[in-house]
Image 1: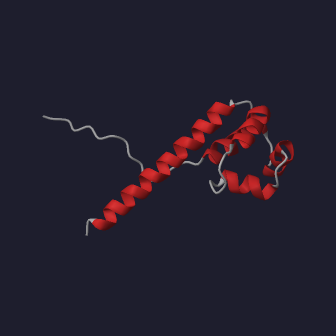
Image 2: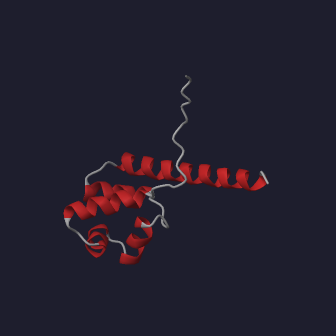
Length: 99
């Protein structure tokens, strides 16, 4: 018997903001409290958590200071998210052409 191994290729991506949401939940903070600590609006934090605002270098530095993860972690998380989005879009466009 031959086992076929397929690479894990989910049809979803997790924005870096989901990690932010998990960390603030662990701290017992609200989005409003995080916004105050970072110097952002609550709306911006909501956009960030939902994957609609990118983690910039400035944001990464602030997240490092407030949440304890490194700037590099946040920038890598953002880059991986963008790469995964691009891969999904490519997959969608290729599957749309296959008809």
